[in-house]
Amino acid sequence: MSQRSAAVLILLVAAAGGCNKTTDPTPAPVPGFTITITSAGVSPKTLEVPLGSRVLFVNNDNRAHNMGSDPHPDHNDCPPLNQVGILQPGQRRETGNLVVLRTCGYHDHDLPNLTGLWGTITTK
Image (cartoon, rainbow, N blue to C red; front, side):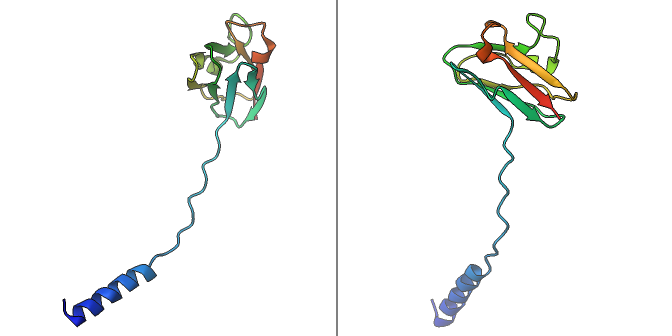
């Protein structure tokens, strides 16, 4: 390599390093709305979400849970919640879009009297 070629290469490397523009960092994703199921119950028990939102249910318990809308056993108060259904341990599933301003109650269909598995989602 000639001295001239080496000098050009050095200039190109230096220029490339000097041209690095700092860009605005990518904004952190907005956390979703999540309800976690454990052996102790659901958490949080009450959740407020914007109109049109979906809520993710995550089963961190060691048994299956069958989540549905109130009232038991009809589950007809808030149909988008019924999309969660049966969650095996480790599974997660979203509700449908919550498009009505209201408070929706939910529970575990298979354990309807276990108050630790009762909760509400309010759309605002």
